[in-house]
Image (cartoon, rainbow, N blue to C red; front, side, top):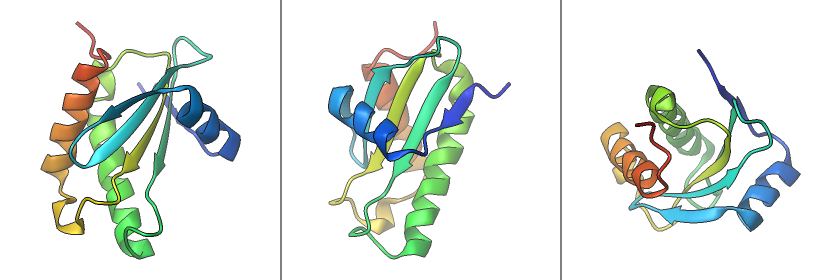
Length: 115
């Protein structure tokens, strides 16, 4: 069951980035805020233009989206989150396993995992 909607509007991103709580991993940064709907999560993914060209940025976004999809069932619902790729992280480090470890670390730290 899909319980996550993508954030698309600029004001949605700005709202979470300004009012959300910040969590940082080795490769990704996450801002998490309580959402308006209790049964739905909202996810936004952003990779800076300064990181790489479009093909590699889209590759990073696909990896993040797939990792989130795999752990979607073990995350509590009712949150808005924006996931950012760190500018200082190298492109060689953009692997499925590295992103998975980072996401698990951040979700544990934010206490978003279901028990």
